[in-house]
Amino acid sequence: MRELFIYYHVPGDKAAQAGPAVRDMQSRLRAEWPMLQARLLLKIGAVDAMQTWMETYAMPAESGGVGIGADLQTRIASAALALAPFIEGLRHVEAFAVDASA
Image (cartoon, rainbow, N blue to C red; front, side):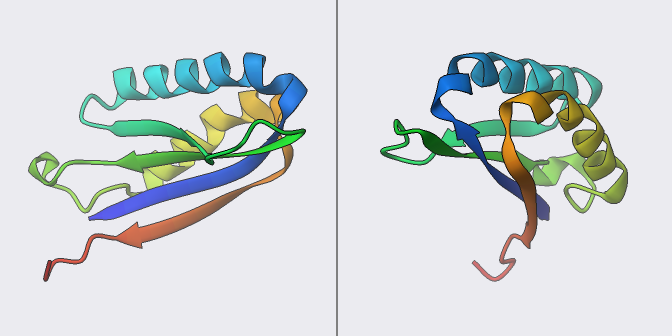
């Protein structure tokens, strides 16, 4: 199952606005893709001028697919364009597969 981990930096003075924007975006994505599991993580100790944030996206095994496919990844990237005013630098996208032997 393919999962996405997307990390980026948010200036501390934009964090109060960025959090609701990310949560709203993820909520809208979950409405479009009901089995989508989306989370927002903040790096521990991220209270300084620049914070590291991470979004995670996964589909449960019972969804019958391979996880986050190209179509959903493209939709996530499109939805994230609204976050540009809150992000310093790029959104870094990493895809991982669940270890089937575990």
